[in-house]
Image 1 (cartoon, rainbow, N blue to C red):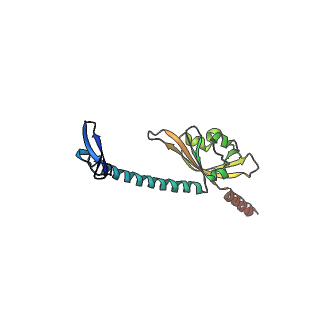
Image 2: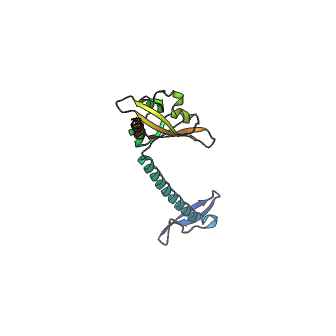
Image 3: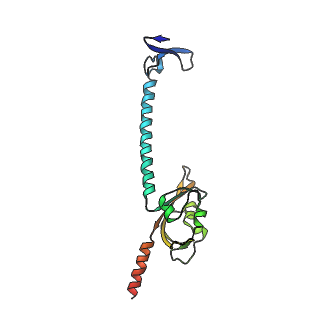
Length: 193
């Protein structure tokens, strides 16, 4: 029915069989114990919209930071599948979407910093962090299977844990120090002369 140009509906409140009237205009015509519900819903909705906008902004900043880093970053799940990788990982490590750490490792042979002693699978940075080990600036030497030059990398790793403390994944950051090592080597060679 219409009343004063406004549509009016009967509204069942709280399932108690108590019918009350309200118009279709927001906030108008509310009566009884629920008359303050609409303003509270509006206020909560406003807060949720603001929080969602802030979350979107924070996600955009994090994504921009992640994608612009010079260091290669890999985020792994507990089985060693790569969940996230930035563009530097694609360039430096030759990561391709859908790879796991085993597939990525097959693209090169990894050695300890001496460049001679081969890293065993259990000593690979990904295996260490998935066991719960934490390390900073662990140097490794990589000989790619393709025609790229060998690389000296410094790797830092952290396990990611869920609320119960169980390992839920891992994060690895790779920094290419090849140019620095080559400069160091040339400097040592010149001092020998």
